[in-house]
Amino acid sequence: MLTYNVRGENIEVTDAIRSYVEKRISKLNKFFESSVEAIAHVNLKVYQDKTAKVEVTIPLSYLTLRAEETSPDLYASVDLVTDKLERQVRKYKTKINRKSREKGFAPIDVAPEGTPAPTSTDDNEDELTVVRTKRVSLKPMDSQEAILQMDMLGHNFFIFEDADTNGTSIVYKRRDGRYGLIETDE
Image (cartoon, rainbow, N blue to C red; front, top):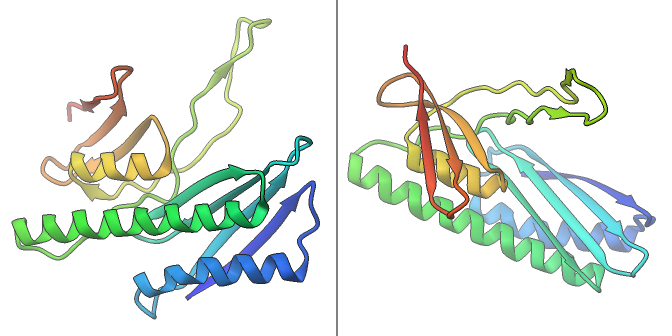
């Protein structure tokens, strides 16, 4: 079952807003086993031009769901995000079920707890500064599952443990829209 962490930026989260968010996102519970416990992190933002942005992140042990939508209406943004998350879950389940039927094994845990952030440079300084650090728990998977996870997270790259070679690999999105794979020598 999902629990909710709803916070607002430039908006007060009223009971009515919280209730609507929980009601809409709770539709996703039908896709998970009853034993699944997860926290849905919901961030509501209202900008000066009166547009509303809704960001939802649901970290699960086998998948991290993330979606964001912006529209002129806060409630419409919640609806759009919920629909997007539902499509992600359906796509993931279809792909994993097809893969397990082909290979004859049960689905495995495929989502790391976090992904590393790139380092940035300050143009005024010659030194490189790490502004954020994340720890990654590498889960065994193949490159297609890693690409699926990377796309669901909305990232440009994804680090994973290759299930076939047991080596660390990276998939990344190329400028031409296709994908690349970097394998490490052990």
